[in-house]
Image (cartoon, rainbow, N blue to C red):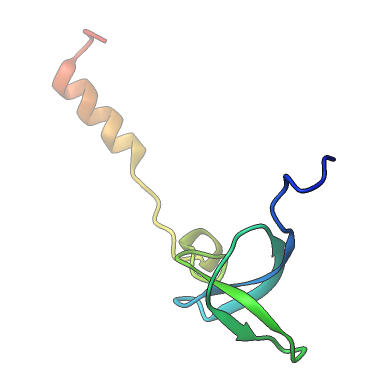
Length: 82
């Protein structure tokens, strides 16, 4: 790799406010805000909207869509034209 052209790759804390989950990962993303982690060190923190703690697929609160009803409604509406 060429030197001095790549962004800094360092530990960053990602925090999901809705799911009450924080995890430490390495990233190139930057932030002005910091948080003290469990190991006593201070890391930049990035707030995220969705993580595995709050996503409906992972929490089991997902909805199943009635695709058969949609297909029947399409055939009633448009018949055999399509």
